[in-house]
Amino acid sequence: MNEELKLVITSSPHLRDETTVPWIMRQVVLALLPATIWGIYFFGVSSTLLTILLSVGSTIGFEALNCKIFKKPLSITDGSAVITGLLLGLSLPPSAPFWLPLVGGGAAIFLGKEMFGGLGQNIFNPALVGRAVLLVSWPKAMSTWWVSAPFGFSGFSGGGAASTFSGVEMVTTPTPLSIAQMYGYSSLHQADPRILWRLFVGQVPGSIGEISALFLLIGFLYLWWRGVVHWDIPLSYFVGLSCVAILGGQSALFHILSGGAIMGACFMATDYVTSPISSKGRYIFGLGAGAITGVIRLLGAYPEGVTFGILTMNALVPFLDYLLPPRFGVKKSNG
Image (tube, rainbow, N blue to C red; front, side, top):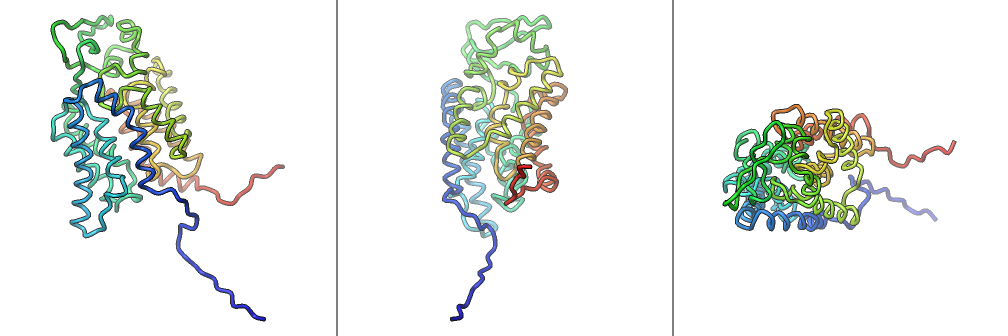
């Protein structure tokens, strides 16, 4: 008996999983909650909550507007705009002017995402694109840091002595990275021997969601446990940053705990769309982003280099994927 065989040809993907984009985005929001709550508590509700809400609201609104203008299906339900807005808001200084997250949100969505065709087609991390536009356009607004007086730094001299505040509740103050760039890490450590502990728990001036290494790492471990992210890019990022810091005669641990290194390595560099596919490519990507961050911190005009370090390597991802394509269905020889 002859049986008719039918060959069905379909386009990719051929491997499917129950994991969805909205589910992944919900996990990232949950992972960022500890750092978000701590930032709001440490800096105060009045200095932070509106900035975060405006940032999230602007990215959602601008994405809906883009869908309306170009007559595309409404895509805000996938949650990617929420993540972009949350990451952008957490990377802004407390007491930022209200228009800063609005402009940043527009730049993140239009320049960082929709210009390339939307989610899955962008080559740069949208939140970092928004932050880069704000850094270049309004550097003063992006580097004005308010903090409770007991946690501020002021009056640094070459010898590392710091003056104390009295009779005030809130002050503008440089961040630990700014002080280290101007006077060296040794001056900062002499003035405050507990600086590494303060950076770990989050008792320093800085961006709203970047100050606590502890809560950011808790969030990353949650994502790793849920299988959302891998450890290869963050680890290689920290190795690259540490090597540059050591070569520059500074503490590697200080640079890992400072600024946006942990948030960038664990929540931005690990973005599926803007990171390499192959394992070797991901290691190179992380090493490069971390090393560029360190070089900018030590030699650049900005005390922080996370944004431009990751964006630079984002641009090289197609090149890395071309040189190091993933190999499917290949078994290693035992010989």
